[in-house]
Image 1 (cartoon, rainbow, N blue to C red):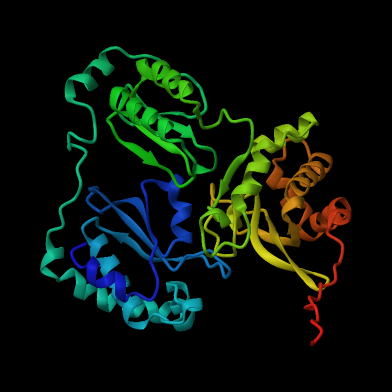
Image 2 (cartoon, rainbow, N blue to C red; image 1 turned 180 degrees about the horizontal axis):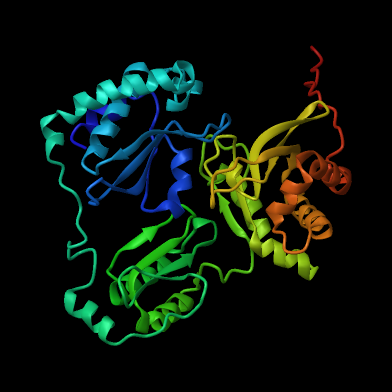
Amino acid sequence: MKRSDLINPTMPNRLNVYFAGCRACASDAIINDIGFVAVERKTEDGRRHLGFELWVGGSLGAHPMLGFKLKEFLSPPDALAACQAIFAIHTKFGNRNKAKSRLKYLIEQWGREEFIEMFEKVFLEKQNLPENREVPLPSLADPGRRPPLWKRIGNRLNPVSIPNTPGILPQRQPGYVRLTVAVPLGELRAEQLRAVSRVARRHGNGIVHFTKDQNLALHWIPIRKIGRAVQALKAAGLSLKGKESGPALLACPGTEFCTLAVTNSQGAARDLLRFRPEAPEKAALFQSISIHLSGCPNSCAKHQVADIGLAGTMTPVGELRRFSYQLFLGGQVEGGIRLGAMVRKGITEEMVVPTVDALLGIVATDRLAGESFQETVLRLGADQVASLLEKEIGPLAPELSDAITMIPDLIEAR
């Protein structure tokens, strides 16, 4: 944006802007400050128009709120004016108190009706700005975004069946697929990143996409080159998403890098990567779930929307305080947003793996035929799961400790 140098320093807090290209990705729009969801509308004369729904006011963190639909339909050129209007409102009226400086608190203070009224007024002003009257839209005709025409025609003339393998999804364009590369905890070695870039250049369009799940996506991979691309990734120690032996694991940087973190979420996540349940049923459940670990309540790893969510905090143990996690269960993104319920506090770092193991055992024992981990948890309810969990991990809780009083040695006066 032309005015970003002016806007960024003056806003009370950042605004996360999310774009969903289809309904399958729409849920995330509800947990971001500004969310656009691609939709189609037909006029009375049968003409087809593409545009966006506009959602606003979502955010997780210590005080999670779901956004609401601000506009049913926006034409693509109006997306910039809509963002500018929300930026202006947030900058002028947003709370400067750091604890309540996100957009959601302004909407909570005003109410939706007042916010909508103000938005419509400012939005009209922004639409009439000279820079917004003709907004250039990106085009897939950009040669840097897709292979040349002769390659695309060659793929159509030589069709090859797409293997039914996790991590391989067909593109809209015939003859091409998208490969999703699993990156445990979002960490890559330099030589691995170079290997990924070589695969993107040799077999794709030279672009590497970093996903919200801390993985990588390579587009425009010809179907006939899937084998070579996968072998090159395997040689670098990488695999496709879905072939991992563990759960969908997401972790923020934690105390290794972040000054706001309370706990070492990366360390706890590595413990879970090494964990292998012994019972086959528990092992199958473990591979099917999502576990998100945030090193503090700010929810950078979105712990409220995972099957199992852990948020770093401090818990009193007698007269001392220990690094620990709050446990959330039952959250989801796919198929609609649902915020998980907090079922237990005081899970110290050494209790993380035993807690997950205990939850797998509870679900394996109590689930009905065909139920997923999450379906069983929701049927049992947070209170019953918490009660069953306490029986399993209660004895693992640290013993109460007294604070040690440090008394300096007395030096006898001479």
